[in-house]
Image (tube, rainbow, N blue to C red):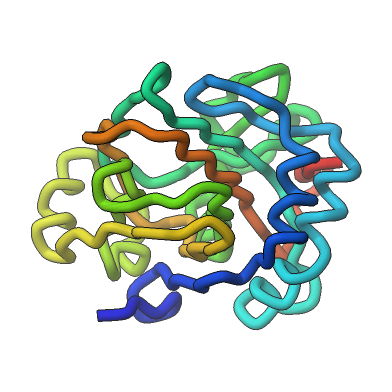
Amino acid sequence: MDLELDRDGAQHFRQLLDEAQLSSLCTLLPPTGRAGVRLFQDPALSAWCSGEPIRSLVRPFLGKDARPVRAILFDKSSESNWTLGWHQDRTVAVREKATVAGFENWNTKCGVIHVEPPFAIIERMVTARIHLDSVPATNAPLLVAPGSHLLGRLDEKKVGQAIGRCGQYACLAEAGDVWLYRTAILHASERSANPATRRVLQVDFAAEYLPAPLQWAGLA
């Protein structure tokens, strides 16, 4: 069964990037070899993520004000092969810390300030996973729980129940594919059974402004 973004919380867009677009993106990304590298202060990458074909992919779901607000490059390989338990993404990256009602659990990652906003903000976001390499079932595809984006902010004790109710779906992909998912969806990643290079650029998109004086960190 093919998933649909609004119904299931995730949708597969096959071969969205052609070879030239994929090559141009790869030239902008640093070599890592690490589990995840947060990418900020990169105007060229910001412009790429704001242009085609990603813009036309995201706008039907968020509107014309959709813009990239955070990016993480995952690079799983035989030397860097990790597992990530079931969870919801709950933090956003901002430029400066400020006291605003509903924003809590502040921390700094890679020199950038992160905070948990009211979960309604997370629910209005979408995340694009742009695949630079193929991801068969043996190379740790993203796992999602279809429909879990509709369950609100889940207490950790209820995560197992939610997965049992929603089931699991493996997001297989080829290089140039994009998986778009609601940022609030439950997701996980297992260790690769047959490790091979598996680079994924994960970009969060939002259309709204944060309450002043908070501002999205963005990519630029």
